Image: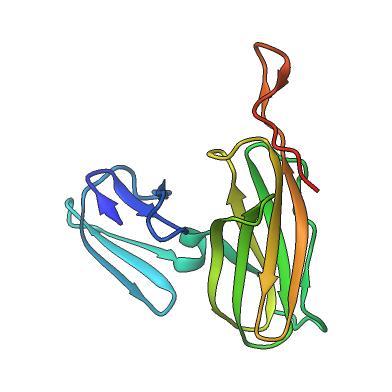
Length: 169
């Protein structure tokens, strides 16, 4: 999505949007195109903004070495506030989903929902809009599923206590 303040990205079908303007500033975007894994934005100032799509949506291929197995690593840091990194390995080209659930199994957000080439990947998860508590990150492909537990700890520095902690499994 674009506005007068640059480029915004949603990883949850438009429920929330995050500004991702690194290198663009707050210029009005008049034209927008995604081509060959790059995003191009034509700005009001007659310039073109170009970034790898992976940087914009938050998923990064961190190694082109082909892993031996599918795997989901434990997020780090954990516990976290407000953001954490999630790494996973895909040994062959696969349609891949990385989904975050709350403690009662309600889908919080979909971080990855696309076909990925074999490799190792990292995706950032921003939990700033969530309450303190236990959440689950699930990696799903056609023939593999793995889930890891994550904990968000939001501390009220003025009252010296946790904010809205939801207990979990």
